[in-house]
Length: 337
Image 1: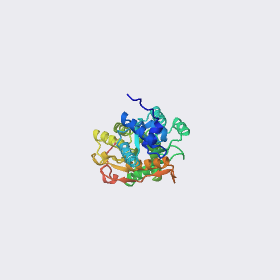
Image 2: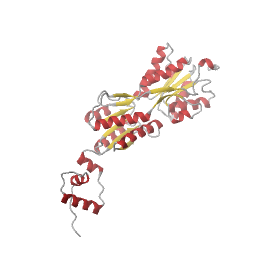
Image 3: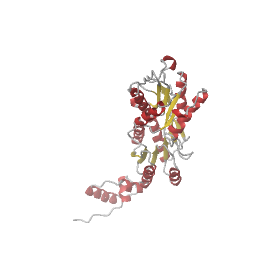
Image 4: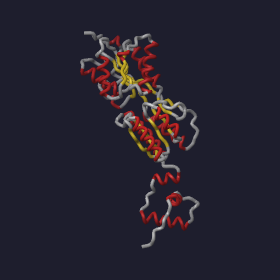
């Protein structure tokens, strides 16, 4: 048997990429080895030579949430158009998992990172101070100025949702906010709600404020907590559709009509919002647009194109459906019985 020629990864890469600096004799020898061994280039080895892997790391809290799955659709659409693949990881809001995945992205020499996390801890800050890998944040501004971010104006959106309920003659409005560590849904959306109440000189009742995860179960439990109070609200603004749907489930199970007894507004306009009974009034944002915008910004960084501004705000709008009603148009229940 003839002795197989030793060919370096860099040489193979130059031949397969049709480099002008490769002799015909060497090209023939390399192609012979490739055919003989059914050679498939190792992505990491090729990346070491080309300093490019054509891989983008995407880190999100969970894929089961319809909002995040649509973000991925938007990212993947742009990535494929530019010849990139995505490496998807889900952290379930676990700090150590997030840091582990971020380090894996760097170790594997990925070309860039798209990050959707709810909390920007000191550990996150330390990681991004040490790395130069192109990065885009989704959902909120997590780092002051270094990296671009794509989001909606959460304060303005929640203020608009609360104002809508106020214009519907509701004066006792509760909020189901996100968890304490979530900047966008726990802080910004709570801030918008409070601003709208203050603007209308309406009472702010801490007992009508909850901070939980964005699941149907958490919305159910949040509604149970609020409706157990002696004085109850006439409307609920939930900072996610999942919490809103959970709240409506609780209200229905405990004899309340929505919107006859109490109005409910959600946030996000997930697919279920338009088919649930009653159909949900909600703030509509477009996660696919957020994903495509984030992917384009990342590719601009990778290709060292100028980015004119760091903050990119995607439009939102209020979609009015069946879960809300003017308080003037309903028979007032005696909540204190």
